[in-house]
Length: 542
RNA sequence: GCCCACAUAGCUCAGCAGGAUAGAGCGACUGCCUCCUAAGCAGUAGGCCAGAGGUUCGAAUCCUCUUGUGGGCACCA
Image (cartoon, rainbow, N blue to C red; front, side, top):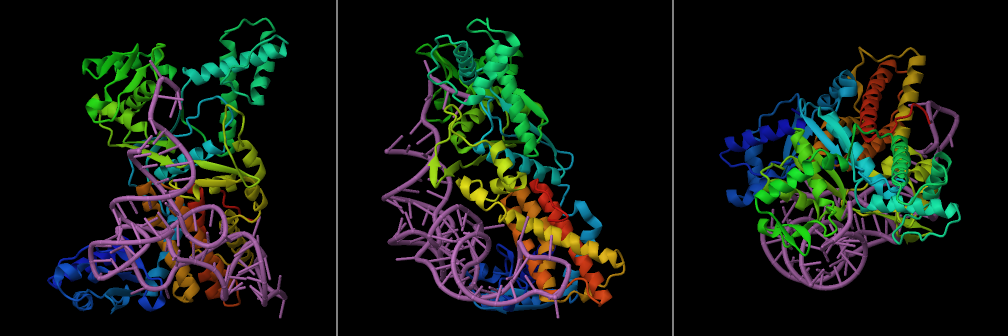
């Protein structure tokens, strides 16, 4: 049980002993020293129901509060009705051996032990290189997977793609058109064709490998394109430090009959009907505003059908938790998938759809409308080449998923050596350097250091911060968003840099040096574990 | 027109199970290396938290409306 939970419990006990009913017991860190280390606004929130002034309630609770001097030096009220705690520094000091003992496992938990999770992300169709837009998805998905793993989940990272639909057909046609273009034959480029140069490269390599006499409509055009582009996508993902455990494609569900079975089951429930030559899903019967087309009059199913079959497959695979990382453009469509699954009697409570807002790309101060088809994009590879993986990964998770992300490509390049991510890494590198220096002087601080020597306010502030790491990691699991970890690490690094300036670690005072070495070792563990979760390196030197 | 997000410093954004004086980075300005890495620290300037109502002891945070931005409302995915 951590400090806040402990105090929370004691507050509730004290409140009940005072004959009052506790209500929303929230404990926060005090911003101002004169309010102690931690505070609760409990009396304020109780005032109305208790029909007493908040200050009076505070006095009653404090009166009943079990004061353990080893933990709490002082507990006192302050207007308009807060209860403040002054924590015994020995509590904070005692964190050091705990953290050093825990090492890599500090901040991890067993919340998800024995449970499985499936995280579906990226899922870009292989029609072109991965762009900045996909990058946000990729990094979010991978980082969220890391967070789950930190809490004991066994995670399957999964990439799903549509290889049977219109997009891929047009891709094949685009390659074919380029192929005949190279052969100086008069062909018309498809209206919605993919215009990127990579299409020409693929056409060239087909010509080298398969000769110049291919007929129009030869499946090699699409197959080769898919293969080449997919290899490229996998390479880009590797560059980002991301690997997938499983790739699943749409075709599978046509081949194994899942899609037919799915449609038949809906039909048996009278949730499907024919109109205007198309097959419709009766979503209005299930409370939606409009019905949806499932099979077009051309005979081609819409993406909803295989997507739903795919989700059923994921459910059947028995995961305890299923996560989808989708762009905001899916906000309106994924509920239809869940709806159909529910209609078939499947539970979808364990599916969490995480929507992120779009990335706006700015170049020369102007918005660039990105389009894979029109070959108007900045690729992940270009970005990684320019600023490095760590900066790219950091950039994509430093903002909340619900914020539109403005990506100013010029600014990213200009400020690449002045980036917030270096602030974190620098703290880690500084620590490594000091530890090395200490070792050079024969200081190990592995045992026997005296933690009670750490009394400087900068030391206590740093200690408070590293003690909160497990809470932050638990929060990240709850909300499934990495951003709080980023903010936390920024704050931790700031506290370390302040400590670095205020308190010299290696001095003539050997006892103090050993104690401070232990402190920075604990800090290093937290920084390193946090950065690792984010997929960002923690360099030994910079 | 309808639905979903968002609106906070010059710029990019935190803060939002309601709490004590609204934060950070970048940019601007001022200081700090005889001392473990100055990729750092300290400080100054910069805000009617989009606007208007409401709930509350108390609102950047919750509710309603208005305005603006992004996304969706396809027999595209």
